[in-house]
Each structure stands twice: as structure tokens, then as C-alpha cells.
Length: 417
Image (cartoon, rainbow, N blue to C red; front, side, top):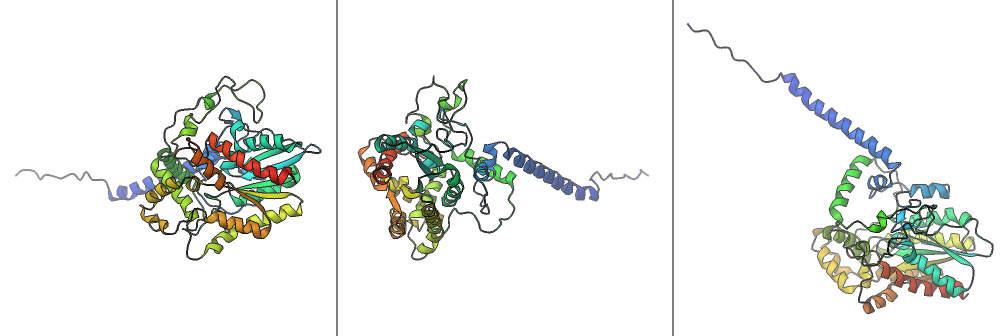
């Protein structure tokens, strides 16, 4: 009789199968918490990490008690003495020469508020506010300066906050608020705006936000050649705002990849333009409701300026969609091919935000200047583009022409009165 064959069960005990998922979950949890801690710590020291871990995350409106506190909170975009196209930003991080404090006796001071158009994608000598200051200095025949306080990725709420905090320190005689028509106004298609939330937002993961935005950034931007200006050798002297980094490098032109483009991928740029087109949509109802919070901020700023004896002016900066009708039609066709925007084309008015703001300016007695007609005429006469391809910002030529139009307006308002 042959011996019985005993089968050996090689499968792991049931308890092992229960423990294994727990171990995986624990490992993932530890990895997540480690990544979260690493990103939050790195964000305190690295502006790039801070930007990618917070961009597109709406947060509660933070009340700043000092100018220093506000500027510190903007260090994602305000990087002191950054090499910006071979010229240093100033010690506060603005694309300008160093601000002089206290204001010299007898000097007429203008402060320019705005977003990346005001800050300018161009190097310091070619930035729109630098050129405006030079023209006013020549035309006005008085001791004056213009402080470029433009900060990228900001809007009307930040303009108002900066106005309040800088007023007693910078002591301006005039403040010019630059309203970008492409995204400073409300999105009338989706009935939203870029103002901070009124209530405390739910917790957001800095780590997951960083990963998501980093992946989007890699997919959305074209691989531009490295600019010699960013590789320039720093001069041995002190880093001073508005001074050149490497004098051996040639001046930048619109032939450089940064200003010729394309910058964003086709898909990413269409999303940007879809967001801007929503500003030119005319809904059947709700226009006043959507514009209400923006207008209140502008009106508060105007009244605060009047109370302080400061001239308050507004300059409207146009979107590429307004300056180039053929481009607008092209983008509208591409954007409305997506289900999200399929009804957008039915009610587009490219001059809708302009009329709404100019009407408020007339009713409130605010001096406003719309740069859209001027740049539209110039664009028709220029064989070269005024905007960076697949980016939406002015190139160097666009900055120069915008400065011509704005300086003519400010000369009438600030020099001849």
C-alpha cells in the first residue's frame, strides 16, 4: 500500500492578505505626508515651489497690516534683484530701478498699479512703465518719477490692498491703475471672478497641487531655447534695480525666443483664451451682479485716493482678442469646438468690458483712458505682431506702442493741469 501523498499549501496565511493592503496604505500615507512636508518647507525658500503649490488655489482674503507683510506674501512673483532678461529687478522685486525713500522734496510721484502687463514681460529698459516715465520726464518739464508697482498674477483686490499700504510710505501724487481687460473683470460666461474667497477654504494639499501644476506646466509650455540673458554673468558690483547684469550680452529684441514665441502649447493657450473670451460674453441677465464686486473695489480705491488728495486714474489694457479681430474669430472657433464653450460664440461683444468700465468712469468722475482703439490702429499699420505668439503678453514692440498711447494720456492729465 503506497503512502498517502500530503499536499503542501503554499498560499500565505489569510492574515497576511489582510496585513498587506494595510502596509501599502501606510506606506502611501507616509510618502504623502513626507511629500506634503517637503513641499511646504521648500515653498518657504523657493519661489518656484511656492508658486506651483498654490497657483489656482483660491484662498481667503488675507488682511495685511503692513506694506512689508503684503510684499512678502507676493514673493512668488516679487523676487528681489532677480535677473529679468539681463536686468536686475529692484530690492522689492519690481521690474524697475530702486525706489527712492523718502520722496525728495518737490518731486511729483506717480505709482503704477497692475498685473503682469504693468510689470512687463520685457526687460527694464523696454518695459511699458519705464518708457512712459521717460516720455513724461521729457514732456512735463518737472522733477518726477514713476514707480512701477506691477505684480504678475494679481487683480483688483491686490491693487486696492497695495494702494492702502503704500500710500503713507511712497507718498504718491498720482496713482494709475492698469486694468487688464482680458482677466481683471468678471467671467460673464461662467459668472465668476478672481477675487479671494470670503470664507475659509477647505484644506488643500500643497504636495498634490505642486505635482498637478508641475505636470500641467511641462505639458503646456513649448521647449524654448535657453536665453543667453538668463545665463549672463553677474557684474561684480552691487545688484541694483534697473542695472544690467552682463554688459557683454547684446540687447534683447523681438527676435529672441522669449518674445517671438510660441510659449504655450496649442491646447494650453486655447484654455487661456477661453478664459479671456468669457470676459467678453454678454449674458441675458446678471451683468451688474457679476461686475458689482469689481466696481466696488475700484470705487473704494477712487474714494480713498480722493480723501488723501491723490489723483486717481485708470488705463484699460486690451487683450490680444480685442486688438486682432481675425485672431479673435480663430480662437472663438477653436474654443467653441469644446463642449464647455459651445454656446460662447452666440453672445460675444469684444468691447463690452470697455463700455461698462467707461460708463462707470463717467458716472464716478474718474479719469479713464482706453488703450484699445490706439493699439488696434497701430496693429493694423504694423507688419510685425504686438503680442508674443501663443502667450498673450506684449512683446517689446507692443510695450513701446502701449507706452506711446499711455504717455500721451498722462501728459494731458498730469503735466498740463
